[in-house]
Length: 251
Image 1 (cartoon, rainbow, N blue to C red):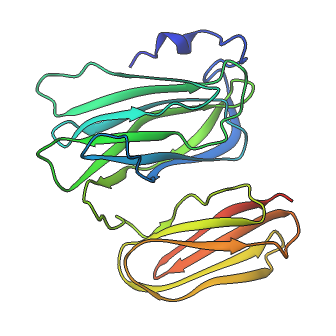
Image 2 (spheres, rainbow, N blue to C red):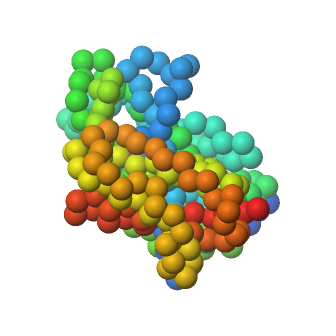
C-alpha cells in the first residue's frame, strides 16, 4: 500500500523522516479500554493506543482494519502539540472490512507522552464483540528512525457493562507519578489475584492485592510516598497470566 504523501517527505521542523532507518530499540503496541467521554455519540466507546517504547516516540503511522458491519467508524482524538490525521483507505465494495490510516506527529519536535485516544462507534444494529487489527504500524524516534514494533489484535465490546476479553494489566496513570499512581487491570474470569511492586534490584517493596476477585475491570492505588525516586515494577499474577509493568516515581 502507498504511504500517505506526508510520510514521503522530511518533516523539517520536527526532523522526522518516517522509517528512514531501523533502530535496535523495541516497542509494544496495543489498544486498551479507556474512560468514556460524555460528548461522544451513543453506541460509542473509547479506546487508547498504548505505546510501551524503549525510547521516546515523536511520530506514529498506523493502518488498522475493522469490520464495517460491526464498527461504523474509528476516530482519533486531538493531542495538544501534535498533528493528528486520519483517512479511510479505498476498499473493494464486496469487502466488509475497512482500513483506517492514521498519522500522529509534532512539528515542534515534541515527544509523545500520552496514549492517543480513539472513539470507536459501533453500527447501530450490532451488539457484541468486534476485532480491531493492526495491518501496519511505524514508530519514529527523535531522529526519524523506525522503532521495531510488536502488536496484537484487540477485541472491543459495545456492551453497557463489558467484561475484559482477557486478563492482564492495562496502562497505569499517572506514570511517571508522585507519590501515587493507579494500577489498572482486568479479569476475564473470577480468580485469585496477586499484585506486587518491586524496585529495580528485584526487591519486593509492596503487596497491593492478594485475594480472590470477580471478573471485570479493577484499579488499585499505590502510594509510594515512603519510597525513593526511581524505577519500579508492578507484577500481576492471575491464574496462568503473569505480567509486569514499569512504573517511574519522580519526586
